[in-house]
Length: 86
Image (cartoon, rainbow, N blue to C red; front, side, top):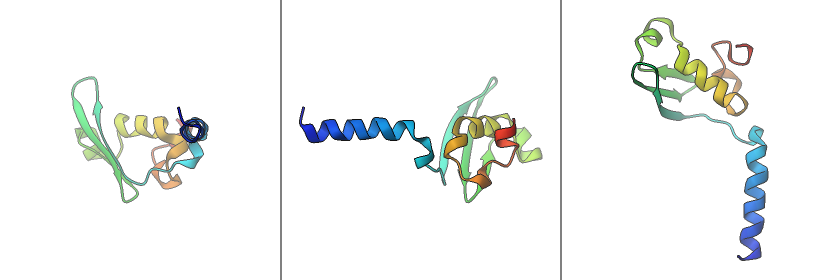
């Protein structure tokens, strides 16, 4: 394996441990809930989810779970549903 590739692999491993290097500003995922799959996204500083609870309340277990999963990689405005305090 070329030494230049070894250096890139080592750098990637270091970066992967330093999650504060990454900030999500746009994201779309399929979230497999207990009853169905939901489309969850983060765009323009706002979460969206296709579940009926989100439509009424503006947050849901799916968006809150995404906040917990990505908490170190989201901009502060993305942590709107009690984010780190959950």
